Image 1 (tube, one colour):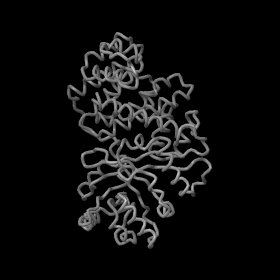
Image 2 (cartoon, one colour; image 1 turned 135 degrees about the vertical axis):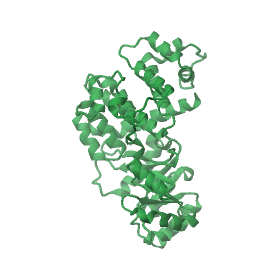
Image 3 (cartoon, rainbow, N blue to C red; image 1 turned 60 degrees about the vertical axis):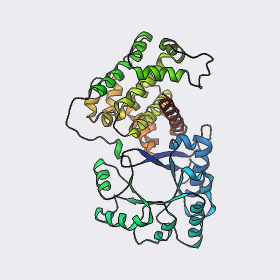
Image 4 (cartoon, rainbow, N blue to C red; image 1 turned 180 degrees about the horizontal axis):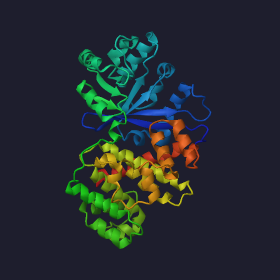
Length: 412
């Protein structure tokens, strides 16, 4: 996963969000696969390397934004103490449902629990041998696609005295998420929040409409420095964020910049347009799930980096391709309506509407990778004329970029 590693040895790492009732991110499960030298059966090798690569390569903070990392351990990794490679305060060690239960396993779980590590049981089934481990577990995951809804409430009630938090995993639709909430689950894992929901078409509130207009204006072709300056200056929060960014420690300036024009010169028009577009997207999503914007930004940067490896003349618009890929979810409108006033190249608009082309292949590559569908990601990359071996480093860089942008936004 670390940039610079031989692609044959690189570990592919993605993440799947775990959300609470309010739609806020509680943590991420790390999804991983070994490099090309792995035959797919060497789970222990891939598992051990994701622990070290997550820390030394991508950085655990970039992978999880400082939140909990749910890391899968095989039987051998558990017994060997591999989980202790990560800090206990932000690590949840996830055990498989078919883990053989014996004295060594129970003793290691007790030892990890006493050391401050949280333990989760994955794909839990009542009455299974894994119940032996419940005294040392803080989380229990239930696959809601493979468990009858009628059994959810009794399971919740049976685990309540143990102070165990239940996570509904495999939540892929908003309807399923609603049913799981009613069933008593406290946390929800899956990509349901990034799926479009059908709403009656109603006018956007004035503030969200203003952000949409700003987003469209910022991305007009051949936008001049003067036009960018006027757009930014007319939005107080954008002005503050631009100035905050240029005056951050990252630029190492010896004198504070207080002029938007000077900031534009120092940062570059393209950079300011990009950041202002990002902050406009965040404004559009107010009241929604923050992870939707985070996912859109990771996609945007990933698509942009893939575009740099492409010969497509529209590749310069690939940042917008990724950023607008969830515009229908954010605006709660069909994608066709969401894009109606966006001045995008035809190939980008078509790709966002699902029309097969090179831009769509790039977006499909990023979406498949973020979901841990490694083979699909490699196949889509091939359709885009890009080597799949570049994906781990590109995704890692996108995560780091998004994390840094998040820090800037929090301080602005």
